[in-house]
Amino acid sequence: MDFFNKKVLVCGIARSGVASALLLKRLGAAVTAQDLKERGKLEPFAAELESQSITLLTGTNPDAVVQDFDMLVISPGIPYDLPFLEKARGLGIPVWGEIELAYSVCAAPVIAITGTNGKTTTTSLTGEIMAAVRPGSVTVGNIGTAFTEKAMDVPADAVAVAEISSFQMETAHNFRPRVACVLNITPDHLNRHKTLECYVEMKERVFRNQCEEDFLVLNYDDERCRGMAARARSRIVYFSSKTEPSEGVFLRGENIWVRMLTYDEKLLSIRELRTPFAHIIEDMMAAAAMAICAGAGLEAIREVLRRFTGVEHRVEYVATVDGVDYYNDSKATNVDAAVKALEAIDRPVVLIGGGLDKACSFGDWIQLFPGKVKFLAVLGETAAQIMDECEAHGFHAYEKVNGLQDAVALCRAKAAPGDCVLLSPACASWDMFESYEQRGELFKDYVRNML
Image 1 (cartoon, helix red, strand yellow):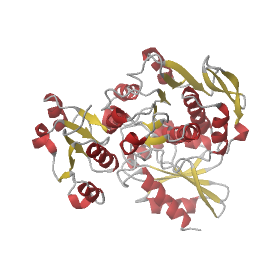
Image 2: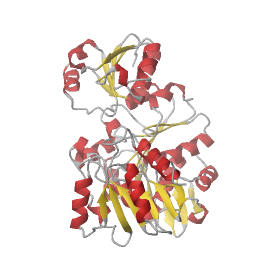
Image 3: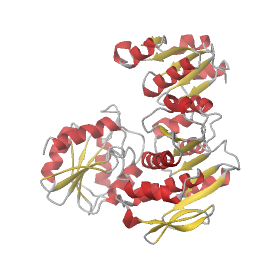
């Protein structure tokens, strides 16, 4: 699409919205950036946009001005069914998201990773592998760097590795990654998508436009993921820790094995890994499968996997205080992620949980507590629901706290040498924090202040 002189309204003045507005300006569009917040609450973003002669529309809803624009680009946090977007679509005005915009101007092939859990770890690993074999490759998307920030600058012979959320797929139209991956599917974001079926459909959009020459990597052990193969036109490659698929990457005893394309050989032993947690091994297998699909050799993959120590906020070791290890798993923003964290730890856990209500049940998480969780400090919007479900499962060792600092102090009092204190909320952070990153950083600060 030619954006020159097009009047574009970018909705949402935050990281992805700013990157989209700056990209559109670079492409010659006449850009207006809008946000419901007042200008004073949008710094330093507002000043950055104005320095590039981008018009600001702040503190107001865009309903009355939608018809004045040729196109809308919305941030992932904006629900697709809002009235002003319905109005725009009714007028025939295209509504895009940041991923669609970035893809439209990116000369490099895209590796797109989605799923409920493990996206950041898998994206980080895949990005590191591809950067080693294709200089100039970038890691972008929901992982921290907006795709639109890098899209025009990725060399055509490199790769853009993108973490993709279900929110971002709502506004994907022509997006077609060369390699796509769906890691797993468990109920999440039902407050936004309403039904599990709608949530799954958003995830499937990552491969909707793929053709026979493209690759789709799926989790064979996840029934919903495995079923996606029937609805895909791309070449299917699996990863599995429970079986040996005909084409894919899988566990054979203590070895990660590759049987795909021209390979049928051991990749490495899990004893060589620095992070031998089961859920991390799954992410590694997925990353290896995608990298092979994109042309990476096995030795480059081995080198990255051997030195990988995990990602921030995902079962991240923080410190040992009075013989108790503290782990930050703030990125566990849903039940399945919190389940995986508990399953990965083989000693008594003093747990911190709770946060934003995403209309999910906590039963699968709480049923793991007996014999594993010594005590739960619960906080946030979901506190009452979690406590009710604890009672229903016969778990009574919990206490509600007013904030994260109180939770850390209480857990310190409840923990004994040899235990671990784990922040693994099973909930999003937005009821009390700006992001799961802020929640995790505060947790680490509170722990380190005890040293």
